[in-house]
Length: 246
Length: 248
Image (cartoon, rainbow over all chains, first blue to last red; front, side):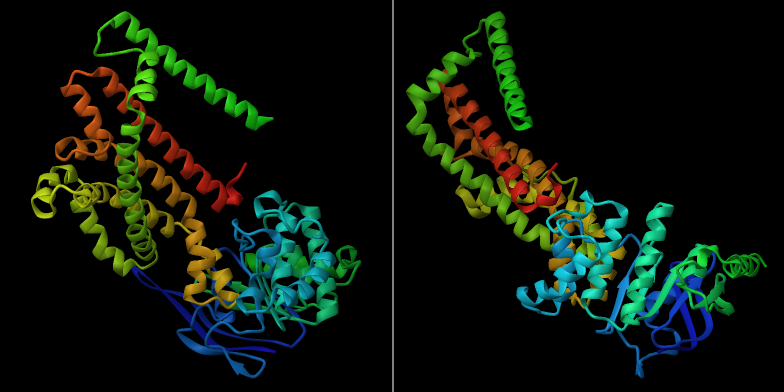
């Protein structure tokens, strides 16, 4: 479970202090997917960095699984914008990086990665460099790298924004399947309303800047196979759009 | 096949250069500019063993100062690129020293260090270390923050970040800086070898001039050009081996 309590964050620039997030409070139950949606500059990415322990809050607390966050947490995996793959490492080396940093032997790395890469349809691409992959393949490598650490929390920043519509929907489906198998507590940042409604069991609408919670919506149908065609889906999309435009 | 084609185009350029040289030598028709064939003949038949000794000394001076500049310039550049505090101290220093013609310090170095290898290498080093430091720093500054954050989120500490992200990200630029510096280094080497002492290809070329032995002079020039070419090719090979992701 993720709990965010009275969270503030302020950026310090040459021009002075810029508040980025003000008084955020929300809870993501364990094993659920929560989507953060809001306009650009509302602090979505900052919030994700805070959840991942890459930034420290100015005020307030973040608790994950009964543990207060003070820095990067072992079992939190992050997928940042632009996939975060290192251009100088092959698909295999990129996917194995987290395991290598945790000092697993190459045999242990192989045992964990081979089934993961196969499951994500990346077998045979191990020796390629990221520049030789399509956008969807890159995103799959990033997912493999995240899952290799056997996380219980997965944080994603605009994971599918650079992909074409079909690849995007395919990967959204992949994510739903991973979610069904592994029950990760997931927080996903997006600016795409359909994506938010398809994936987010809970949708948090942020406004800003500075970022504040405008609405928290429950979304029972999230991840259902035919959900995209259901009237509730479109109703909820419309509602999110209205809240964003208000 | 493209490798073969590339080799052919290099050979064609070489042939073109020699043809142009031959053409110039023919129309100028002055013993001060012998054609390529007599020069080659003089290089291979008359001067080779002697010239080889000078070539070794010159190569040692260039490579030694390049290595020294890389060993000191690269770490400083990486640190300055990643730590603004260090950069705010280093940047003005580099900026103020950049326009000072380091070659002008050659006489000073000779007074202080004598006329041995150390003097020449110091001056070459002073000329090229700036180029390497600045290029490395700028490359280190431009690393996308998402890459660093991604790897940090996997649990990488400071040292791992340098090893896995910062150094490889800057490596192509560092090698490019090395290539550019190589040209400057050879120019400065020539000047430094013509001032004092009795070793090195620069000395050999000037000695040929003073003896009006233009064959020897051109043998020396060709040896120096060949040295530059081989070193340049070696840096390309280093890039090929160290940066496999850059291969086309």
